[in-house]
Length: 378
Image (cartoon, rainbow, N blue to C red; front, side):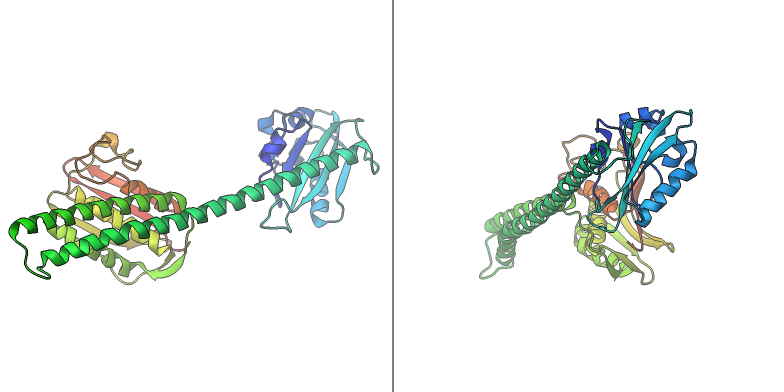
């Protein structure tokens, strides 16, 4: 939606603006506030009619303009303190590019006797023409900026997809051939060479994980689209848990899953999947022993994903910082658990994009519980 606020507030003439279907003054200039005898803070966010001694007359003007019976209405009105001003109100169609039928209201106040109703070509007509032209220019500029931003977002998405493909493909080939060599294809390897192959595969897997994190963070930052679809979130939970099952087994950690009965939701499946995956990976990483548990709960309006662990826990004084980029629970940018410290930042970014919330309950040495609550319908 086009926002004329910056133009109105900086205008050197007494101007105010009412958004379509609203009675309150959305924005006003200092000159307008001075002329109606109120501080600016008592003008914006307040019904225009309440600024005058005869509020019903103002309401009738607005209704007449929005009904399309007249394009401009000008005439004297009495302020609350008894002084008179000439109040000119007029229709401003089409400042919202998404709703060309909307009719905003422009308001020009002048001192009593300064400007009359105005003949074509007179001072009032000329002033209104200039104001309307300025609002139209502002609307076109806002629309152009919005289109430019959309184009940039699409270009970034294409770039990320290209980078993702170009980096992942050779690394997956290195990992795949390393697996073949380790399996003795085409011939069994001597023990020394087997050690070298394992190191190559481990380094490639580590590099692939870092690339995945970078691309994941970039996508969360640049891709603001929400692709809503209907899916069974109860089926998604064990599906994501299976992805980290091997990592949990290697770490000697028990992975528990409680998803319950099928539960249809309308949300962005890819974003929900990424949220849960990041929380599980984070929990396994910071749990030396014990278990990690994921559970799904719901109400009529929301569903929640709970990931709890018996890990190291998080100190109270850093719990409000762990959702920052490049931060881990150890409390400094230099970490010993690997990764880049962006997993939880991605979680929070995606949760915000889906209109949800995230909470943390943790004690040092007693583990952590993260709970993400999301609307069942976007």
